[in-house]
Length: 219
Image (cartoon, rainbow, N blue to C red; front, side):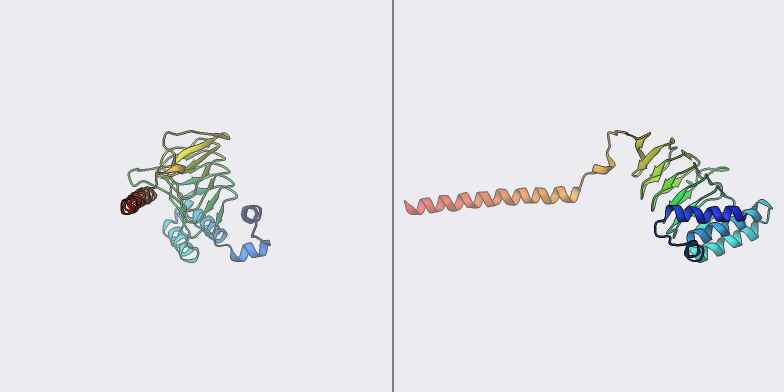
């Protein structure tokens, strides 16, 4: 247990450049506190002290703003950075050295039974506000972009962005799609450009009318 706690602190020190000392991490990092509460509640959950485990997890949620169900399975070196709003569901499985940012949800779709939450591989990074929903796997060494909504399995070594999430890089190679989430149409901008074109046309017509009137008056 102590070895696991030391590994949790080491994960923060290695991945957060703002972490100045182990003491600072120990006292001030809510993500770390949430993980430790989880480890206690998970041990109780495995021993079938379900109610007590849930009480501890809810107390941790109250203190940290991070909700980790005691039934989830979490490996070594999980780092939750600025973790307010993070939710990890009951049947979620998380591998080693995973990084989660604020607002991440590892949840279900509401349509599944049994294993209804995602399985996250090793060395995965899930950025702020991303939602990974349903019983699918996120492969090792993958990255989920901020605000993405992932509903399908992601192979290893992939980068996913968008709503719904699409793979844009796999094994270091950019993946092309017919629909590009990075170049979405801008309806407001198009309306403004159309209005500007009409204004330019009207100005040209007014200028021509003035020139025609002046030429008529001179004759």
